[in-house]
Length: 436
Image (cartoon, rainbow, N blue to C red; front, side, top):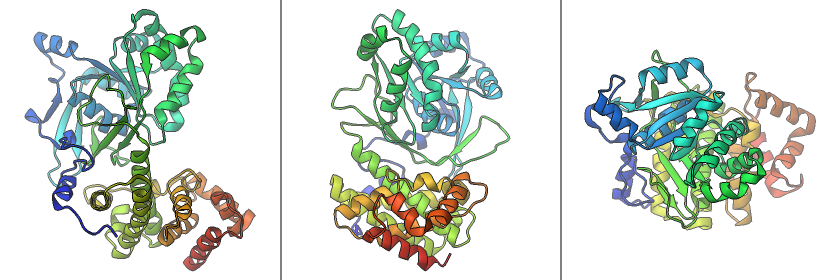
């Protein structure tokens, strides 16, 4: 399936470019003068300080791996001064003092770039946060989907002051989270905290474009606490709904409807990554890279993605050759020898990953509706049920559910189907074949 590949498109994927957009260079792997992104280092001359002050300002919630290693880099390349909103006092101090940080790309060359100018404010500093948001042209987040409620109140409070004083200036707010329609979720949370008297004005001035992001940033500990190591590839897609974006961020793809792109990422990157981790766990490997160096594990992961690929082609009409190249590139990214991603990190939270709306069960149910064969995906679900990690709370809870309800009961609950349903029986058979 999908084996006829357009070689030029495949080469573009090798360079980290999106084959589903116009030929937009991937800024993550472009060389910059002296390896710098954005502005000069901390010791700016007066003229350089004026130049930095003239840059449009982007306020970004979250100075973690994705915040610094993806969103911050991309915004700096687009000419923004990036102000991080963070909780870690030491991180805030360093960002304020240094006004820059380093990004290293996990590749043979080990290219390193410096990102700046940047600044940082604590999320609890109401006055300073309100000032920064009052001056911002763009707000983004990368705090984790579950943390959006914890930042919504602070964001709403700062927006309240801006709405009072801004004179009608529009402001896009993009939640760059690993979840479906995160910006729409953030909008609902923010409006709960805004005074009702400001709702009409907020609806006119604030937009919350939904987005999809993709970049592998493994867990890491570096001597330089601000240094972040990332893969060269990245993809950031923003939904426009047909309207012209207020700002065009360099390297971002703008689409009318985000739905197909979200499913493409969820059913390829997320499904493939966890499938490789669960198959790798059963084979006794420690990292995803070690697992994918094993031909049997790689073949299983590839088979899963061919099954979900057939679903994506049927639902959204993606080009078969392009999607085949996307699968190949995705597996290459997972296997990148310059990264070391522990299986325990990628396989964690199996109970959530087995939800009906998530990366394993949802494509299985959608494929079943279309009459598609998904036997290897069923094996991946069985492998997720067999995952055991005493340090992973969800793994422990899933094991309790299996003991309490039995395999058929647990599968019936997760799939939302009767115990007698063919899918329940097929996944149960796949689990039994594991001999766990």
